[in-house]
Image 1 (cartoon, helix red, strand yellow):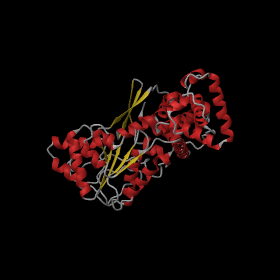
Image 2 (cartoon, one colour; image 1 turned 60 degrees about the horizontal axis):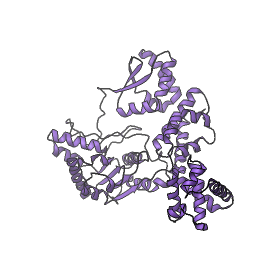
Image 3 (cartoon, one colour; image 1 turned 135 degrees about the vertical axis):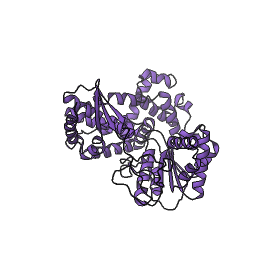
Image 4 (tube, one colour; image 1 turned 90 degrees about the horizontal axis):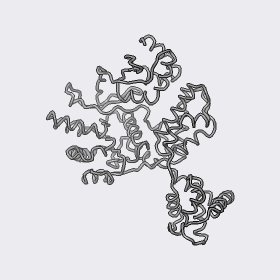
Length: 459
């Protein structure tokens, strides 16, 4: 394939993805070669290659093959001679959508020109969907991003994969760049901190390292759990932490779990992290997932203005993909791209066909035992009372709720469910299920109890 032909394909891609996506993600790609069915592109950064691969590879492959090229997959290689952006001084501001780098004293020496991780232009407060599970974390992040007096130090954001920790970290950095361009803000991963520390040790430049890290106004370290077990790195991190706190400089940390639960993290580091505000980003609930999907659909309208999405699709995805927001967003991206390519509306049939693998992987197996425990906790009764022979209403109604949920949320047969409830007959289970179905129509409290329990079990 020639460069001229790639240029022609780019014009088609521009019409499909829109000007903003094209300028940000497609235009920087440089076609290098077509090798045994693999189209090789040069990219400025690994991040860009990964993003294009995840979000636009199907579309690019389609256009390549449609033009007569036999391409099976794409490969992205970081250009060895990618230009290095010049460092800005302490009073400069980033251009629109440009990923800011660390501000440091300008010097020819690479150790004196420490660079941080680039910021993702998509991760701002405007694009962060707020719900009950992340309300406190969002409010704390907003407060810190104002750049005012340090009220809690450090701010520690923790939670599982895909719950928004990195999004909030980037959003804080972007906001500080706008509101307080005078501040020296350093955002990097714990792995980058460790790499720079090892590099300084190897080159005998520890004094330069200490000066650079301790002269920042705001230090942001993502995924701090990765320094656990690295004794020397933890010691330097501890001293850097103390030096910045003593200077009343803001520190913001993220981790995949609470500081006290990070294995092999030194007690003194745990203690330091726990002395500020530690905020948990809880797993998303149904309403928050639906809100995220609705926000993403509005964003996609610019790229796919004529695409129709039928009622019930977003609600279906919000129910079925409940563990990871990244998977949820990726599923929607794939759905829009696929529907655009085949020229069909996004309905339930297309959704289930296109996302069959994602839906299978996201299907969490809820057990009868898990339902029994959750129901007994909810009604504040013993598990033995749920399973046992007592027929008091205070035990019988929760038992029927548990049977109903087992019928709805598991693939167990009625006889199997009966056996798990103290060897009861399947007709007893049928009666319990039918009774709850009837009560849901006339008793608001029962309906609310069942819905709350269902959400808790599916979360």
